[in-house]
Length: 84
Image (cartoon, rainbow, N blue to C red; front, side, top):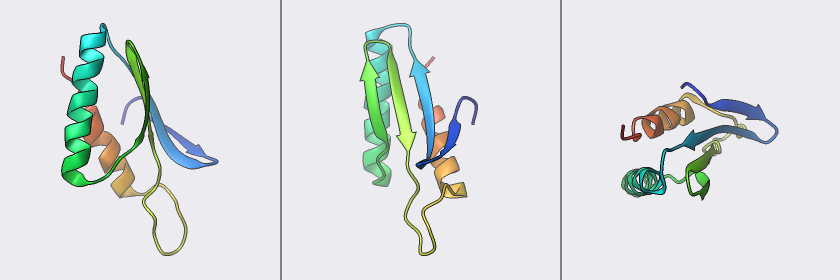
């Protein structure tokens, strides 16, 4: 989970992905979109020509919204989408 920051207020995981070109940024965003559609879970995304900021908010649970193992696993899977 290199590069992911855990924030407490509001509870979330955040990471900035930086790319060499717009094409690589688009490749990542396309792969992320396909992956998110497949698992039906969607992070918050902001992006520019050579970067994408991803924010993962916790899945709702019965007690309180807090980052869980499932959220960390989601972040790890997003990291695997990077095409070198």
